[in-house]
Amino acid sequence: MTGVHAIPSPPPHALPIAGSEELFPVRRVYCVGRNYADHVVEMGGVPDRSEPFFFQKNPTNLDPSGEFPYPVASKDVHHEAELLVALKAGGDSITLEKALDHVWGYAACLDMTRRDLQAEAKAAGRPWEAAKAFERSAPVGPLHSATEVGHIRSGGMLLKVNGEIRQNADIGQMIWKVPEIVAHLSALFTLAPGDVILTGTPAGVGPVHRGDIMELSIEGLSPLRVDVT
Ligand code: MN
Image (cartoon, rainbow, N blue to C red; front, top):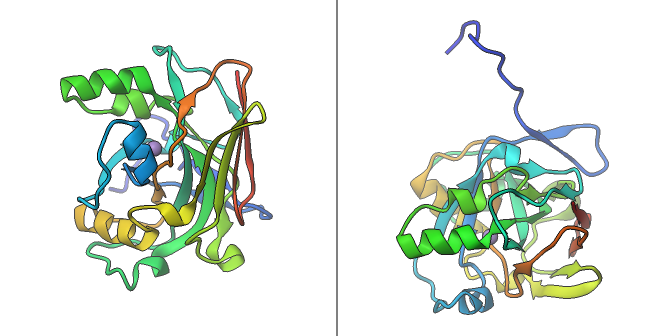
């Protein structure tokens, strides 16, 4: 719709791009659940290749500041180390073969989770928004274009908290690979430029506390350092 807005409207939320003055504007944030077998097991599930499932965060939850204020309403906030995939093109019913043509680039990201609220939601069969889509719940490193770093199909992902290794995996261990995720998502939603996807976390998720320092590195991408305040 064109016309004058009745209230002030915010500009699109946009993220830093490594080595560039340009920003990446974010439209939607999709997240994949249960995408690494060892994490499925640690959460009490059985890994399989049944349909991947998705939930969403809000664009403004993505936070490049390097600071994670401990959120309200929880006493058990966990880190989940994830590869973020940023789309430059959209559509629906995207084929597996064409899926990577829609990918602009990648970043290191944390899907911070209020685990206590998630456990309550799971037990009650309720949605996960309160556990997942809270303020500043997705600290994110600078984006890198696939033109610069290539498409990421494998490579180490390491998350340390206060220098201690918590999550140590390889991107290649994903149950649903990036092209499969894009294809599946596009069968459920009409994707568009600016959509980003958090691709799931491997084993080793755990709590953080005020004063902790989280350091996430993914091979080929800028590392992400986040202070819990
Ligand atoms: Mn996650």
